[in-house]
Length: 106
Image 1 (spheres, rainbow, N blue to C red):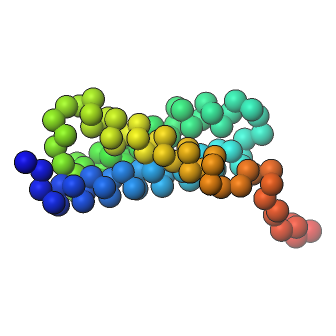
Image 2: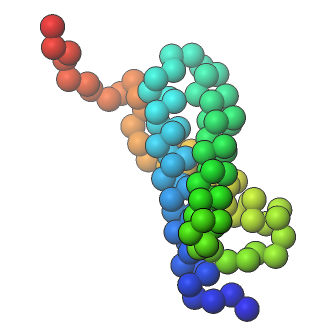
């Protein structure tokens, strides 16, 4: 049976990984000027960041619940936050081209 602390730890893991995915997606969309660059970087680099965070939170800090199978843990800890983070950036944040930036100092 899963304890309340395990459920809260799993929720913390999902929230932290979702925030990392959203911020990294925004960073790659703002910095890369190509069409495929942000997609490739988000698909290749962000899961590595999420995996490292998952190892830190569930391994070192020992937060989270035992989900029973590695596939389910991968789905809940990495795939779900990745999809949620990309969705937050694409649908709830303005596009990088639409944002007004302050003029640079000369």
